[in-house]
Length: 299
Image 1 (cartoon, rainbow, N blue to C red):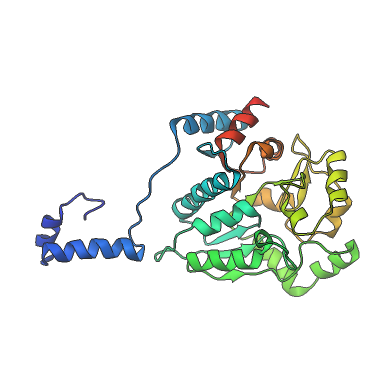
Image 2: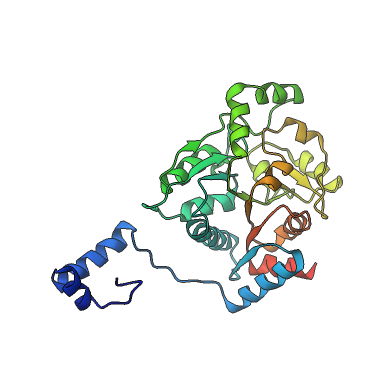
């Protein structure tokens, strides 16, 4: 009555037969409990224009561009916060959401507000056991997000990368892992990061899944980054590397089959992988910052 119908506190008090101070207390309590959430839209008019140009150029459903920041961590937080708002407002009909891992995904999870009226289950898209860093703690991210949406979490109890193709194939044949990947096909949406082959930016490198030499070789083979561990060249084609045979993760075709793929990435250094993902038609919604958006358009 107050926020949607625009009634005054006095009018509401008369309508529901309580005192005006009681209405005031109830409104404050609603904000405190998270029933009412007040946010400021920080997308600038310049960001809206950049988003429009990217939509027109690449044919994606939606592009959200957050303001420029000189600090990469602040930029990641801005992108994560914008993605969190998108998840809260635009996945109302989604009962199962897939999630990857990475620093920007971590910011998405951190910024999601608890939604008492929502129920959405969360499922991991790739393994992540044996982590060195928080941004590869895929289990914790899935658990945290499922609590925010009052849902169940489907955790993938397997490493992201193993020593050989033989071991990968054996693990994928395990009943609970096979069932997990079959369940992913039921997801209405997924939220993914766009990884870089630059060791300075690579979550895979920081977590110890790939070495500096691996990263160097990937660049030499034309890989500019990855989606859920699957490497792409600048035109969006998959790079068939030996590392692919050791990964426990969704395939690019799995990703394309999901109705809504939401990708998050920030910073000018992610230009190549953002461009590759857009050219390859792997994503439906891009959430990025002004520096990356400008750089992609210039490319």
